[in-house]
Image (cartoon, rainbow, N blue to C red; front, side, top):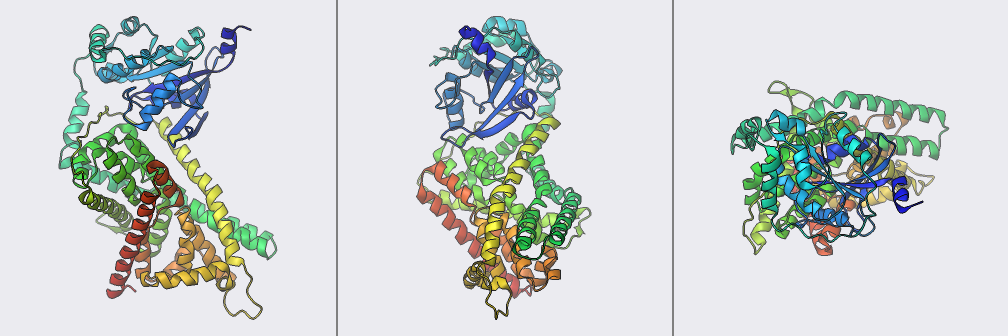
Length: 623
């Protein structure tokens, strides 16, 4: 078998590359569907997405979705990885057989420049002119044949949001001869990329105007210094109202199913340690966390939709002045918004911030954003202490309180960043340079894939670390066994009970009882574990079976004061983040000192804020 036949027999490795906001990920989802796997590049925490698909002629392809880049002269770690993979230099990553460069047909002045850089590498390459349907609606004409002739590489059109929008690309790939064996290419960029880009635009593109009328009309309002901020506040407010209103019916179904499963398992097995482990530990613990999955998915759905629509870069631009006054920049907005899902990807996303000072400040305040792991705790406490009634028409009081908690986290992050800025020697300002993509309607397929990935990440946490911690906590709550003459519940004699009673002395000024103190410890591994831990602790400390069968919400409503509930809510605004976040800060900054300073600072903030909340609430009669 010849070398060419051997290469044609194995799957071709394609690298999907392009500027941010070119529709590259939508094209990746269209081609690969559910045949994707997500990991990290070797040695770093940058996300690596790979998928497989088969062409109409039977040829198989492995498609790697590279991080978005503006240039092969990297200004961030993401761009450095894209450059090294395209050149074949990245350790442990096979060199691609073919580059598929995706460009936005509505913004070719910017995107063609990067395509010229990629072409200079000398690798086999296909140019996919994406969003061609949007370009035609705007009156933009792209002469694909002329562009192919001038570039001397295959050029195809794609519409990544349509079912058969990549058919031209698939046909071209199937007709292409076997590319030469992948080789290491250093590549020298063209001497004047801007002049060459202008020549290509003149030769192959007819553009009546540089921006779409609808983009200009929307931006007049959404980028207005006053109306734009009001619109952003309204959008965020509606999101948190929807988190409660839309998720409640599904949560009720999950709650009913969990109760039925616990009753069925408890009635089947004989009384004993195994029965207690499964019912009080596993089912009560995991069920207490899974019930909040609908709320997390609603929040993710809105964040994904805002990202796909092109609104998030505009929000970053809009908030740049406000964030600059607090010692951040508009580029910090997207990493901080990512931290609403989880602080770990938010901290990783700070690699796109070129200024080291702004990047460090963003890393330090990212854990103050209200991540989705806090949502189960907030939902539990708000449901227990805040009435489920409406205020001001359809606006729900519970959603209003949730919105206030998110605002408190944001305000605290800005305040901490401002204090850091006052302490820094370098107080210079750094201008924000940001591309504003065209508005587009999010595609349901991309939203569904994004929700599926995030939902599976959450469930894997529940099935992995949370399951392990729930079982470990059950063991600590049952060992050692109570003495024969015991007069208190068995949990008081256990290792966890003794730890909880010892910590209660430290946290008593905050209104925390020993059960809360026990739940805070596994909460360091994952915040949402605090809910399952409380469920396990109260199930095992109940005086009788009937009390153990009660839901957690009425138990804490009857057993805690309003001051304690408010104090715990405030604690979780600032609570020292999970161990995984500490590890990420250490990895991103390569500094134990910075990681320790972040953990100690958040613990101090949490303690002082909760202390103030509890004491003030008691003074007002809520204790």
